[in-house]
Amino acid sequence: MVVGPSTALIKKGNGRIEVGGARSGFVGSTYGGDLHVKAIPHDNWYLTSVAGSVRLELPSTPKFELDASTETGRFQIDLDGIAKPDSDVHQLRQDFNGGGKRIQVHTDSGTIMIR
Image (tube, rainbow, N blue to C red; front, side):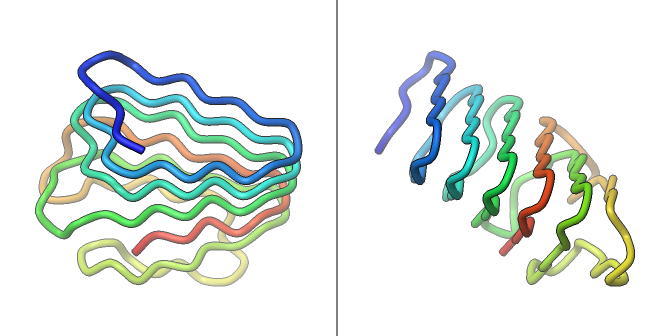
């Protein structure tokens, strides 16, 4: 549940990954399951899912650079400061609160949710 000062690497085939309190770098990857991260980005994050959704729950105060993409999925954005893209957009790059640590998110066919 809480990732200490070292980088966490979590991979799963078809299951769901839930992460809360990541305090450093984070790499999360799943093939057919969802990936849910609720934390403050203190270092770079790399999140991928082939057929699952990726959900980020972030407070409104941290500074980060978002680089999110999906092949055939969609975006669901509900965080002030991040523009809500049109339904046909499949890539989103934006600095939040002036930029900072990088959050890279990709899913082939799932939804990317940011709250």
